[in-house]
Image (cartoon, rainbow, N blue to C red; front, side, top):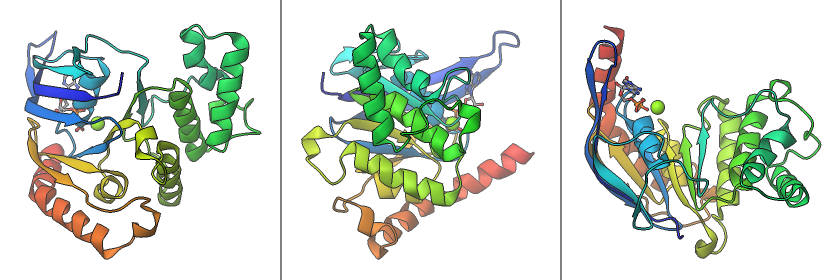
Length: 268
Ligand SMILES: Nc1ncnc2c1ncn2[C@@H]1O[C@H](COP(=O)(O)OP(=O)(O)O)[C@@H](O)[C@H]1O
Ligand SMILES: [Mg+2]
């Protein structure tokens, strides 16, 4: 397992069981994520970003097309693909430790091994001292750190993240972006990095984090363009750089008109 993802001609149409109404969410989307590569998906609200991630996670099946993980068709969820969402993040009835231990426990690790792993990742995300807190006793940023530790504790080959930082304030988001890059290995050996598929509506976030940014057009989602972010790593010094600014502007120009139309349609 190396974490290579191949999405081939993916289409997804949701059909309401009650009314029979059809929503075409994605149309003929193909892309790949190489091992060690950080790929983001941006696009206007409702363009099918979450659907795309759910297809790769194996939570939903495509209407046509297929997704391969290391050449084998994805038929359902797999712990080798770790998932992190904006809100469905933590079990409210479990402590930080209980949440982080959950994955390894479900995979049949021994109690000692599981606890050691959980503590290691709790420390890595900076939550030591908070092991016995419940999610409601944590700030938004700490909850997302905990969700990140839970993902990492499974040691997945692929990280699938759906707007994981959308619910936290701007300063916290900037800090967590840097933490995410650090944990991914932005400053280290590229061979140690995982494959990441990261959904965000933040263009600057996508540019800052990614090797490539896939820009989806309006519903039904189709790939408008894939932009290679040719900036050196580590990225930390480049956050407010002119080079990053040029990528932000380029991608914004790709989606501006469609984003504006999506707003009008949503409020109609
Ligand atoms: N389970 C579902 N049933 C019916 N329609 C859905 C379902 N999930 C998403 N959709 C619709 O599919 C489209 C794409 O949704 P989604 O993938 O959530 O977009 P995004 O994450 O880009 O905002 C939207 O029109 C949405 O309303
Ligand atoms: Mg979404």
